[in-house]
Image 1 (cartoon, rainbow, N blue to C red):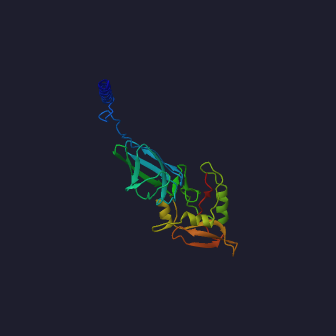
Image 2: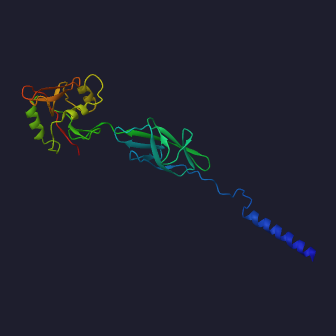
Image 3: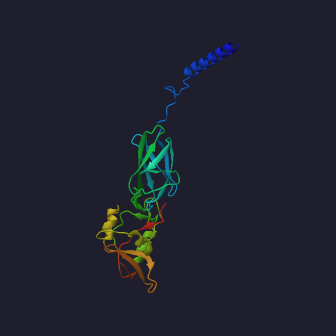
Length: 254
C-alpha cells in the first residue's frame, strides 16, 4: 500500500513539472517584454495659460507665451507614456516642477525598458508690437492700437484733436489723440539713437524725430499742452495755438 502511494506521488510531481514547462512557468523566453513607450503626448503651462505644439517626428515642443512673461520659473503640466521624465537629471512632476525656459529645455523620457527619448521644449514670447496687416500696430504691452505710419503734417493742438477724433481708418472710427502717459508708454524702453529710429526698428514707419502732441493739457497753464520729442524722448509743453507739431492717432485696441 505504501509503495502504491509513493508511485502515485512521483507521477503527480512529474505531471506537474511537465505542465509548468508547457506554460512557461519558469519565466523563460515567454515572459512579457517591458514597454518601450516614451512619448510626451500633452504639454502646457497654467500660468501663463499656454498650450505646447508637439512635433513627434522632430521631438520638439513649441510654446508661445504673452509679451512680458517671465520665463525663468514656469511650471509645466504634461502627459507621458514613459516611466519617468527628467530635466538635467531632475525628476519632473507634472504641474509641480519649476524650470527656466530662457533657453530650450531638454525633457528626457525614460521607458520601462530603459530606452529614452529627448524632447526639446522652446518657449517664445509674443513680440511687443504686432503688425495687424491693415496699416495699424498693436502694442502688446498696453493693448493700444496705433497707426503704423503716422502722417508728416504738422498741426496745432486743437486741429490735431479734431483730426484724430474724426478719423475713420482700418475699419475703426474711435481714434483719438493720445495722452502724455500713452505717448511715454509707447517709447518706454527705447534703445539706440532716437525713439523714432527705435520705433522704426519695431515695425513702424514715417516716425519723425520731432515733437508729437499729446491730448494732455498743462494744468498750470491751460493754454499749453504736453508733447513728446521723438528725437530724444524729452517731454515739454507749449502753446496749443502757436506751435504746430506732429500727431499720432491711437485707439483702445480690439
